[in-house]
Figure: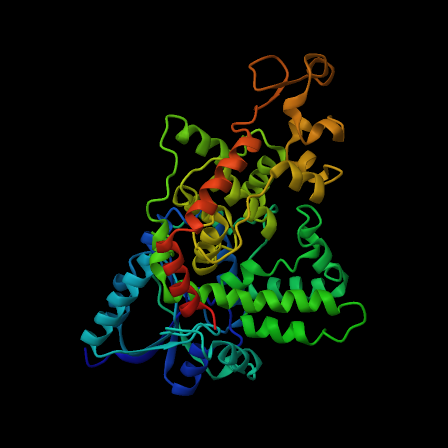
Length: 486
């Protein structure tokens, strides 16, 4: 035991980069040999919020980190405590450096276990603040000032040549080899990719960002597409924010830069909300909605499955879900519409769909995901109630039907006057276009609408506004505002 080499650990989680990285800087300054550790934890690999796309992105991100350091990240595939215990048997671990994580309930429980284990072993565990998310934070009185201070602070100058890197070989034979095979339909992970994507945004494609942000097709190009790189820490929020501000005086870019920088502020705002009130993973943040009724009839499961698979009979809803399944990305408005369709038109408990969308979003970030999901489901009591009409959204944001035709290929031959409402096809038109709606027959089929939105809109509106007026909802709304709004 006395011959063990004394080392420090840098535990990587959602911070897969080697720039503007405080735990790495602490390891540099400590001077001891350093081991960089990433653990593919079974509890997360089995968590239904995650799917293959996320672990491929992580694998690609780790490969990028490895390309920038003289050593290799030590990768394990076991429980976190098991990995730490194995390392502590081979080495004398002095300190663990990591970022705080605003994660799901299982990662919070794991972190409490790590804290107890480290104390038992006499190991220092030093956590750095992630972006501008404060822990604890009982109100927002000084939060905006804090955010500005963090975002405008000088970037951490990581000097990797000062790290005395060592590596430990774990058994990772059970990790799927196909995680190392790129999926050309999805964005690839890694800090190098992140920098290229951001540079490309400023080359030209982002100039109309503010104008095209709501368009399901054009937004795929005009949006920054940086969200997965922020979610997995390939680039720090501060580094992106400062890069964005460098372009604020460019001719013709003012509105785009203003819109993008404001969303970076909202990024931390929603994660902070989840950090301060993490029970929203399981319950309505506004307890006044605890008894709001959701459907429990015999069709709920089949309607939920239709929504999950992009088979609702509403072309824009189905196109968005199918695009998401294949690419891991749709823009913000379309995400809101999917949640609205689930919660309002189908009147299905948002909790039955929240993990499914999390597993599809390549940029799944627990704090943003849950705060946004509840806001769009209309159960916060403080946000504007938005019940999206999917047909109206299609006509406004995909007027030529390009996005719908791309993802609902069954409808590709329909003219625009029929594309957005295929259930209106006459029998003659069905024969003409060789398309049957909601019927089993020879030819290409597309489902009939699983709900009449003209009816479901009124029902959802009446329900949500009635609950909005309740005394218990109003009391909770006041509490939420006092805690989460300055």
